[in-house]
Length: 111
Image (cartoon, rainbow, N blue to C red; front, side, top):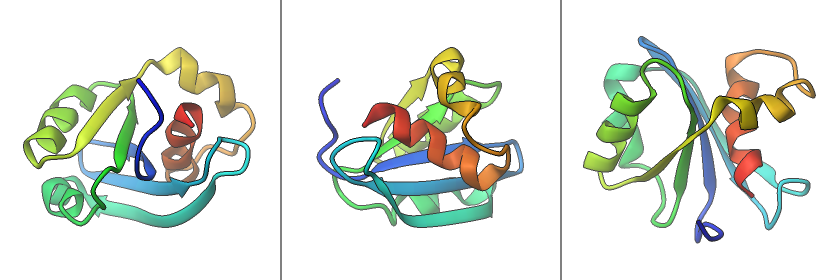
């Protein structure tokens, strides 16, 4: 996978709610959180996805409901990829665990 054309959107998806963070920048070290969404209803996932910019890439850490979420995003026309949990865990130790920072972590691993 090459570098994304738009922003990288890290998505922390739970059965009932999700949080997301849009990162912009040329690499993980300098990427800045441009926009964030916190504790949105998972029922609104497709509606939220349609507000993203063309070329944005949504990155989700693998979990129980990840693949159904990716199917829903792709059906809404969004490019979405699943990040293997061990890769995401490599940077997890650097952050406090909460949904807002969990949404940023997957995006940083791609850039």
